[in-house]
Amino acid sequence: MDAVRWTAALADEKVVRRFEALVRSVRGHDWWTGAIVRSGHGRFWIGRTNDGRGDVVAAHRFAFALGHGLEALMGAEAVMHLCDEPLCQRSDHLAAGTRAENCRAWMARRHDIGSPHRDCRGRLARSRMIRDAVRDGGDVTAVIDAGVSWRDLERPPLLGLEVVSTLAGVPAAPD
Image (cartoon, rainbow, N blue to C red; front, side, top):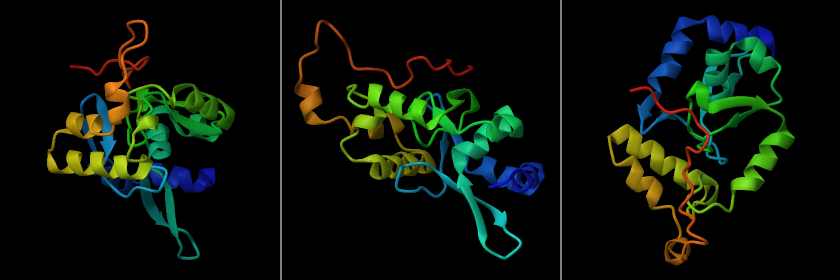
C-alpha cells in the first residue's frame, strides 16, 4: 500500500477507533481479536480503494505505524514481533527489520520449547484459539500452554535449562 493511502487511514479517526476496538490487553500483550490470515497474523480492513476494492493490511503493520509513525513503517521492509506472538499489536513489541532478519529470528527460535513458533496446533489454529479466548474472557495462559507438545513436556531439561519465555527480551508491561 502506498504512503498516500496509509496517511489517509492513519488520519481517519473512525479507522483508528475501529482498529483499537479490535485490540485487547491481556497477559502483557495487546491481542488482535479481528480477522486472521493463515500465517496467524491479524488482518485489518482500512477502507476501499478508488476502484472500489477493499484495502486490507496486516494488523501489526497498522499498529506499528500508529506507534512508530508512517515514516518508520515506510522505511521498514518487514515489521517483526519481538515477542514472537503474531497477534500482538503492542508497539513496543514490534520492530522494523528486513525479511532476512525476520527469517533469521524465526529460525533461531522455532525449536525453543514453549516458543509460539513451535506450537503443535500450527500458526492459524493457535492464533484462532488465543483470539477466541481473549474475546470471550477465557484463560489465555491455558490456551497458550495447550500448544506445547507432550513430547516437549516429557523431555527432561538440558543442563538445567527451563522452558523459554515468549517474552524474553521484550519490555515489561506497565502496571
